[in-house]
Image (tube, rainbow, N blue to C red; front, side, top):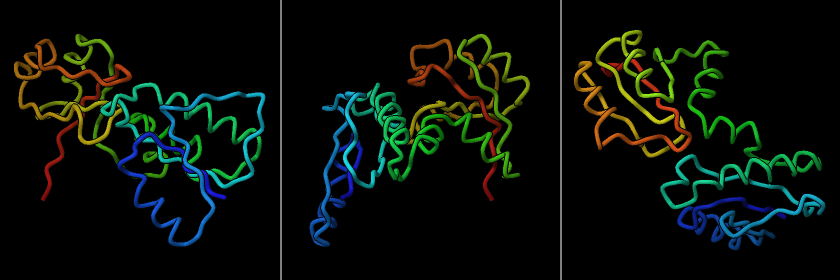
Length: 179
């Protein structure tokens, strides 16, 4: 049996259609409607985690935290999990993604991370202009904006258009010119 853990019904229908076509035994765990009893044993199955960093855009702000607990529970019980806790950890944090990439000598742009807006302005001096902002936890390109100078960055950070990352961490990153 395959159990799919997810929070986005739009993504799941192609998979359920494929499972049915192949006569796979499957269950769907729709996280927004789930609770977890840690005293229970998880069903004997292969688990496939489909949690997304952009879940907050669908009104599912806290589902990644619940999925993190679900994955820990499954792993404690030695269940086979595709996209387990390590994958989720990387999915919901660009900071940790970049650290993992650098560990394998995959270069990432210069990056400065902060919660406080004042620190972002100071960090921009370390990165230099042009730079981009982005959310630590997001998807869909949320929070990505380019700035060519400090005045424009300050106007955004301290203005009404500032979009905070769901985890409160904003990244400044050197702008990389594409060929």
